[in-house]
Image (cartoon, rainbow, N blue to C red; front, side, top):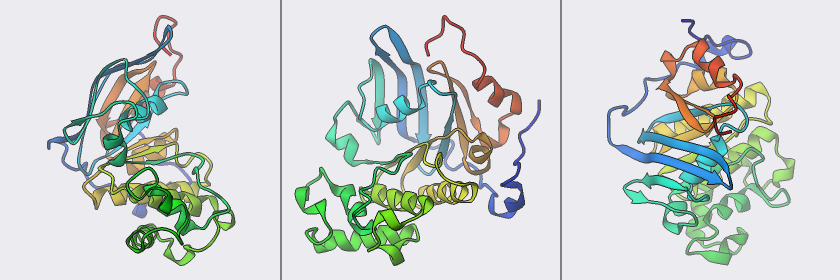
Length: 276
């Protein structure tokens, strides 16, 4: 069995890619997905997915387009209903539109989902929209002082405090994604979800963003799920790899133990009798 190695452009950065052992692999689960299925019409999107993730662990979700990666993240965030099974976060069972679940989850999207005309600071404060502060979080000038201070602290965590008043339109793609991560941190999440957060970034920015997410996870009482297509980047930075194929979990192992054959099998054609 062939073990995957880190190729260019990451091979030259080997010293920065050392991955600590997976954390709390035997500890209690913070996120518990049990036998989750999602069916839309006659199409099965997820089928019997079971996944337990402890605090501090970073999990890379790999799979071909249509494998169910985004649907799984949306179910974990309480943004999509499950047809059967349960999703529990910190002992609480979530459901579609569940406010309690959504307040405990921070989500980072592929296209940032930031308001380009607004400052980085205002966009980070938007992370509190829908919570108790309500409309006051629409702009930094109307936000309560304690939330402005919290937003600045979140920007400091991602290295963007110096550009807090810059419009997002003036930031690079990597900088904008850092602002999006800071916005997710505004909820003090127990679960960080990132859906293809590096797809539109150059190799250096991809590495920076993923390393930032994993570092923040290890420093917080949260766990991290990242949907990602770059298997080399995932193996170099994640603690654990979960592979989806046809809506089913077909691979679940520590990143250091994953083989080339296992990765390649995720992208092989799905037989017609399997869900897609």
